[in-house]
Length: 220
Image 1 (cartoon, rainbow, N blue to C red):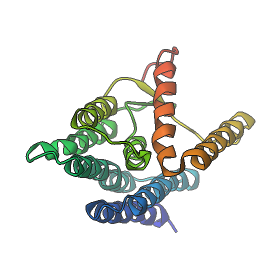
Image 2 (tube, rainbow, N blue to C red):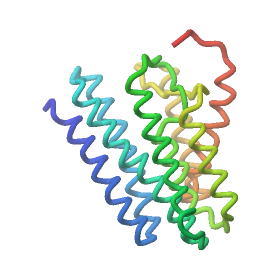
Image 3 (cartoon, one colour):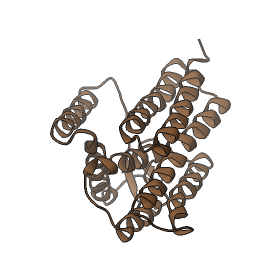
């Protein structure tokens, strides 16, 4: 039973590998589904480990490696595919993998720091992956400058000192209300914008977190 969180982490990694395959053949609908499901597994592997007291150093490392695939390599590959689709020539198409490098740095920094469990420092890698995976569904013609700006901005946010809100599920009324509000918002965005809703939802999360950053908090 204690291996359940590790199995979920491996499922997360496997879905990341599948997403890479679908990105390679430009099947963004399937890639989006894989990333979304990977994010669900990423949430529950840690959640189950914490509530059952099954946390371990091995599990934490496995979770981070899985995140690197699903939420580090995948958005980098997606950005590279987007640059390819607008006929950017080599070697400039590989600028998309700046996101992957920024994600690796962010995960290493997170794993070796003393983290305040109430919030994140820098944009979480799953949120960044969800932001990017919704972009192909926006049905807009992006230019090289726009994609490059997205690469630079998100890579900066991943390793910034900005405080990002961290959802914590607790057995309290306020926690339940917050979760329900988020689910309702996601449902409304999904019904209105379909798969592009994920980019819009994360954009709202980033804007909210920028404001949240200016609220006084205890030191890390």
